[in-house]
Image (tube, rainbow, N blue to C red):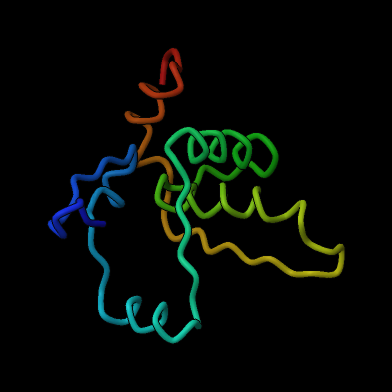
Length: 109
């Protein structure tokens, strides 16, 4: 993420684990080789994904993983019934309860 002068741009994410503007060399190589595609989801989509996964599956994902869930929710309707979509939930959402309570206006959380 760069500004118009090529300097590192400021970032913001509701997820502290995603609030940085760089990637490692492995991800850069995967992107450059065409073996990986990187997309983004905004905070609202990630928060909506947390709520949907919690209500439908009883899983409270970490906010970092919720961004991937949001992308899966966007992609799924475009896929054929026999296609397989895997989402890795790499963290627990209980660590994010303070943020979730604030952002989702939860009472008593």
